[in-house]
Each structure stands twice: as structure tokens, then as C-alpha cells.
Length: 470
Ligand code: SAH
Ligand code: SF4
Ligand code: F3S
View (tube, rainbow, N blue to C red):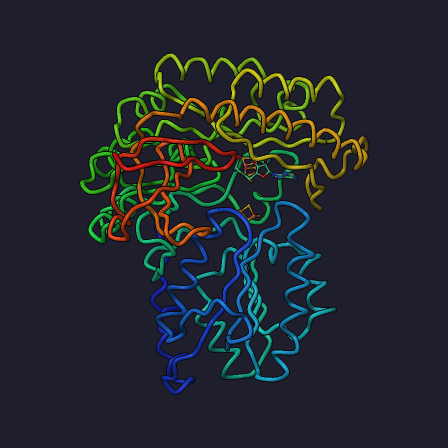
């Protein structure tokens, strides 16, 4: 899909500067949700900084407060409403502009709630209107009007937005938007629209630019990365092949060749789309980390069917075995939902069984959360809260025991670690990550930040390892 022209929209960057009399102002941003949302926030920061807004970590200092929201689970809603309430007084005192964007704003019942209970919010935009933020802000400033800029469309590809990245060593690159899978529990396809891939050339140019700026690690992002360009191929939607890229596997191979980039990661792939060409590309590309996030969701074939995941327990386990055969050093992380409607003790035991068999490096565990508009929300056999929590606790215990056991394998090994920065808990220590994404804390000089060091692992803890430079 060709990117749309946003030159007209970007003109508002200058207009905002003028209306603010070229003053330097402050913005505060809070991002909820996944790495795609984080990457969107980096683009919002990019636009704001071009408009002479500088970032502050303190909400009360800000002239503009921006929330980039998520709605994949329920808990984000309370958090958002709490925050909007909190900033009300600040708005009354110093006319702070309040803007809210992102996935939650695509939900009608949320929009209505904001209109009714929080009418003082200045700007609301959705996932398809992120690039219009300068125009929305201009209108809010010039006309002192409340801007409601949410549209419900399949979605477009936007290129050329300014971006201000959070990190200096590792960077996220969104390769596709939207999702066509419609897992029955999930709200994402409704709020992010249909799946569409960026042009290969645009991705390669972005990664090359990141490499020139000194970035070492790239994470490719999408709701279903291993179906990159497959909708385009199936539906004969035109795309330009560039450096032989016409699939996710060929994209990995092309990025692997870019000098300066040392590590490539990707999230999330879908088990149903894990074709052999992708497995072979992971095996052959030395920069692609042999840590694969392979969302399981449930270990029960029954539940997987009702979830519309399109694989069985056996197919998932066979896929893991196949990858282990082809890529001996491969390890896995996963996402699991407990308490999906109709989940029996036996179904839950199947989930535990897969966890025991695969021995994941990390499991991101979620209690099933009803999402308005999804098929699972309309199912009658919802699981009582206390059973959901009981199962969650049981899974958590198993996972923690496994992680502790699993971490022992790192002891006395030498790990190459990309150094990310100073440790949050101890300013005399540095922190970095192994190819398998384990955090390693170690003593070292600040000039090592952004470099790759070889560390001997001296001790292991639940959430991190301790290392020593060798
Ligand atoms: N596209 C990715 C991730 C989507 S959202 C994938 O398919 O893996 C991230 C995770 O949130 C999902 O993997 C799932 O485990 C969890 N999730 C999504 N909807 C949920 C819901 N309604 N309740 C609880 N967890 C949910
Ligand atoms: Fe949601 Fe499923 Fe799409 Fe992931 S693949 S975003 S879980 S619908
Ligand atoms: Fe949340 Fe939207 Fe990501 S709903 S998980 S921020 S795609």
C-alpha cells in the first residue's frame, strides 16, 4: 500500500510555533500499552519537539499533557480516568492543554464517557489520526475549541513523520499496522483496523538511517509480523519489491545485511504463520536473536479453537520442536490468557502442560478481560473472578519456579551484552541485555553504554543476572 501524502498536515507544525510566538513550551506524555504504542508515542514526541515543545517527566510542569492509550485489557481505563481527573485542577490553574490519543479512543463507549464526564479534555484523536496531531493542536489553540478527531477506517500507511526515540542503542521499527486475525477475545483489530504492511524500501531506509546514527539493536514491530506483505500478496495489492524483499523471511535477510546493526528482534509473530522460510531465515541470519516470542494464549485445543487461533496444542508443540531441531540454541517467550470463557480445569491443565514442556524464558500472563464488541464478551460461560485468579496464581508459581531453574543455565557462561545504560537500582552499575533478552547488571565505565561487552555470569536472580567483564 502506498503511503498517503501528509505534507499539508505537517505545515501545521510551523503554524503551531507561530501561534505560540515561538515560545519553548513543555509537554508530558504517558504511554500505555504495547511497543507499537510506544513507537507511536515516539512519533508524537517527534512532532511535538518540532513544534518547540520539550519533554518533562513531571506532569505538573507541562503546558501540554498527552495520554497515548491502550484498551487491550480493562485496567487501563481506570488508570486513564484517574489521570484525567488529576490534571483537571492544573488545567484550571494554568490552561494546560489535555490531549488523549490511541487505541482506547477508537471505542465509542469511552468517547461518550469522556464527552459526558470529562468535557474539559481539549483534543481527542485515534489510531488513524495520529499524524494530524499538529493540526488538531493548532485548532485547539487558535479557536479554543474542543477537537474530536477519531475516524473508523481500515487504515492507511503514513511515512515521513518526525520521530524522537526514547533510547540511543535500541530502536523499534513498525513494519505493519492493524490485524486481520480477529482472535475472539481481542479488541485490537477493531481499534487498529486492517492489516497493512509498509513498503520494503521505507523499512530498509529507516533501519539504515538508524545504523548511521549508531543504533545497535532493532525490534521489528507488528501485531502479526510473520505475515508481513502476505495480505498484499494474497489480494494483489501493489507493493514495490526492493532488494528482493517480498515476505517476512526476505525482510529479515535484508536487514541482516545492514552494517552496524548487531541485533535484530521482532514481535509478535503468530504461530499459524511460522512458515519454514521464516525459521530458515532466523537460523541463517547471525544478527537475528534466537529468542522467539511465540504467543500461546492457551494450551487447550478446545479453547484455542474458540479463541480462533487456528492451531492446536499439538501443532504448537510440533512447531517448537521443529525450531529446536533447526536452530539448536533457540529459546522462547510467550503470552498466556487464563480464564477465557468456558475454560475447564482440564483445559487449564493443558496450558500448564505446554508451559512444563516448552520451558519458556519468560511468560507474560494475563487474566481474561472482557472487551466490549468482541465475540468472547458475548459468550455466556464466563469464568468467575476467583477461579480466574486461582488459576493465574497457579500458573505464576509454575512459571517462577521454571525461570529460577532455567536461569541457572547462565551461571559461569560468557554472554555478549548490549550495554543500555546505568542501572536504575544502583548508579554504580551498568545494565544491558543478552541475546535472549535477560537483563545483566555489572560494574563498568559509562563509556561502555551503546557498546557490546563480553560478560561472565556470576549469579542469577529472578528478574536479572549479575555479570563481570572478562
Ligand atoms: N498480536 C499479538 C499481541 C496482541 S495483545 C499476538 O497475537 O500475540 C498482547 C497480549 O495481550 C496478547 O497476546 C494476549 O495474551 C493479551 N490479551 C489480548 N486480549 C486480551 C483480553 N481480552 N484479556 C486478557 N488478555 C488479552
Ligand atoms: Fe489480537 Fe489475535 Fe490480532 Fe494478536 S493476532 S492482535 S491477539 S486479534
Ligand atoms: Fe493496547 Fe493498542 Fe497495543 S490496544 S496492546 S496499545 S495495539
